[in-house]
Image 1 (cartoon, rainbow, N blue to C red):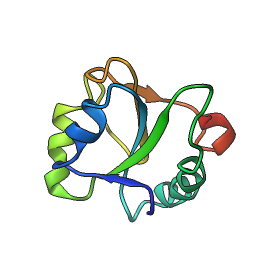
Image 2: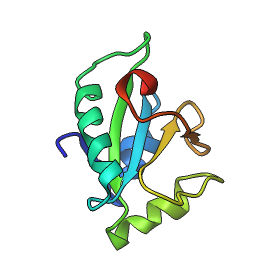
Image 3: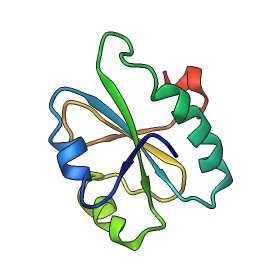
Image 4: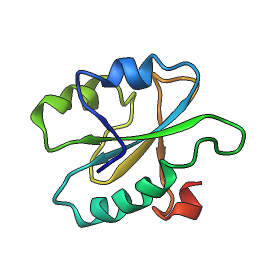
Length: 110
């Protein structure tokens, strides 16, 4: 997946400490069929430099990597990632991301 891969070493400095951008983070498992489809959508979305006048960046976390469990327990606020794919929006309040509950197509994510 050629967009911003986030892991337990980079998540805080890349997403949480970023005060200028909104981060839309997908929690994915490489064997998940829905995750593979979302990956294709993310490749398109990641090329858009500015959406609706705001700086928005896209990234993903591979939940199959045990080390990334720290992200799930420390940086998802009160929301628990229970299935893949799950998309979380890290806006102004990075400590309390919002789960995206819409359709995983490009027009709906935009």
